[in-house]
Amino acid sequence: MYMIREQLFRLSEDSDITDQAGRPVLHVDGKILSLRNRLILRDPSGREVAQVHRKLAALRPTYQITVDGKTVAKVRKHLFSTFHERFTIDIADADPMEITGDLLSHEFTIQRDGQTSATVSKRWISLTDTYAVDVTPGENDLLILASVLALDLAMDAENHHS
Image (cartoon, rainbow, N blue to C red; front, side):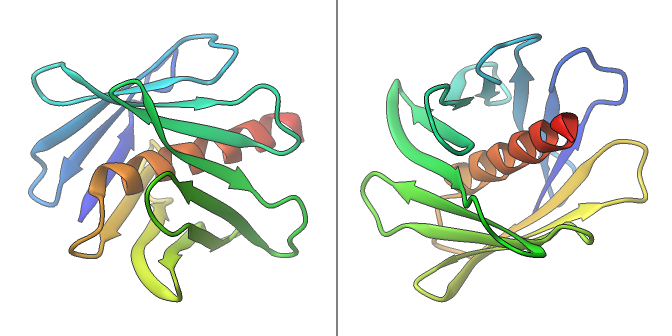
């Protein structure tokens, strides 16, 4: 289980990702006023391990996840969905995943081939946005966490446009 906590007084999209015991796993460095909504994920020593950024030339909100300079996945929002949000995670070397969730309760499930890969719950009780992410053993934790960050960027962008 991971917790993604946005910092309370922030000028960017900085977040901290901790494990269940509260130990830091990743720091998310959001680039202020970045046109591409770029996030850099760093390990506790400060080394960059991944990036999430929005593709500008796309018909629907699309975010790329890169590791070591290579695109490993794209997270695309489905254009038409009724009361549920739907995203597809196209993975470079594996079957795609689907993110489905409830707009009002901010509960999401990430699935591959009908099997749950992770569950995501946004907590409303804290002063900052906090996501609890429970990743199924054997899944790529970094890819799942980066996908949840892409989901959050897409939801924030949608909320700012409405």
